[in-house]
Image 1 (cartoon, rainbow over the protein chains, first blue to last red):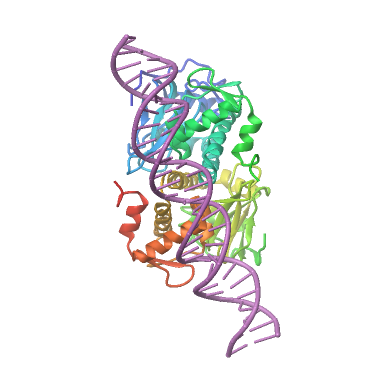
Image 2: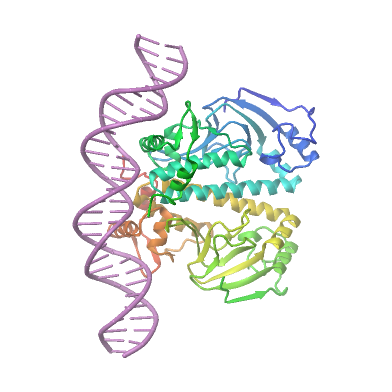
Length: 247
Length: 247
DNA sequence: CGGCGTTTTGAGTGCTTTCAAGACCGGTGG
DNA sequence: CCACCGGTCTTGAAAGCACTCAAAACGCCG
């Protein structure tokens, strides 16, 4: 844990408009909460800024805090006994990380970019959850969504050839942005080839080869480091779900 | 959908002991519910018996019902555009299937054995959930648990060699039983090699070869069709997480 | 300019898949 | 009773895709 600053919220913001801490009532836990609840949440939560590469929490740490991502991108990883790592998923603004029914966090959470987080102590969150059933309902919704995307990922990793996995990853990056409102032509992609490989169950070399193949076919370009522009979404998503070129 | 019979519950059972429909208050949704709630649930739910190989619901069907497995084992599968299928998971007594925040079920649910299910219409369930916050809490718990096991599965499929995946599958079969109280020496295993292969992202031949290898090493035996006895759990779980023989 | 981490590219190996054939098992009908 | 049949499982041999090992290119930062 390496916060640059952590300031307790002061009750000055207009709670009937947005959550004063997380800055939103259309994303994260605060979605669809009423004014009183938002005010309540603000009072219980802290806002913090953390730099890229810092760990929000580690696998095995006591799971006594929950975080909502306000800005930035995080990577969730599990370390295997043989030293390899599996990236369980990436998390974007609006996502909640660290909520689990286990005693300890089941994975590391590492920031890929500078980020602003909203932090809630677990006991306080539990109190809020019993006080506002709609909040628990919202959490259930988020959990279901996470479950669905993880199952999707299972299909990708389990049954698709290398290039199809990389294509599926790129399309899902775009989808993640669309789900949050905007679909910029050039996407942020702060993860390294190794990160992507560990997410897709491949080696970094194979991921690299897929990217060069896509580039040569004119399907994408990388205008600068850590950014991609998808030029032929049709082709990519076709490859991703096996609709194209095979059979 | 192919129910052998579907009988509306009659309020004769003692609701303060177990859920009259699902027959339990220590598993499924009914865990930790009070007497009034259990009685209420019983009144809203149906109990049905379905034969092996029948579909509880199909991917794409309107998700207007939720099922709790009282007895039997179910297989959840997604069909890929290229004809292959991915088994998303297996579900056991006490598990809930069909609860989703999507309009349609995201996968097929097929029974591998004869089964008894508890059926709830989605609108009725939603009413119950708002009436009994503890029930929603329980559902969140189940969802979290499912998420954790799916992530576990992701690691298995993504980063482990064939035999390790099969070993992990066998160990998880045992764990599933342990979680539900008993750990019999001989496990029911109603799934075919093809089912297991589609679950693990392998081919049925590779799964078959792994089983023969384990048998030759004396790690397991199959006393009869669709049953396994794990003779060397140590070796199997060692292989499963790469602790053994490698490095 | 030098150093370090990331990415790219190449060549060879190996594990899993693919293709194919035979064995096994339970159910059915002659 | 037994031969036949479909489905499942096993086993073998060959091919392919991704991995491993290795080295060079690139980009960033001090």
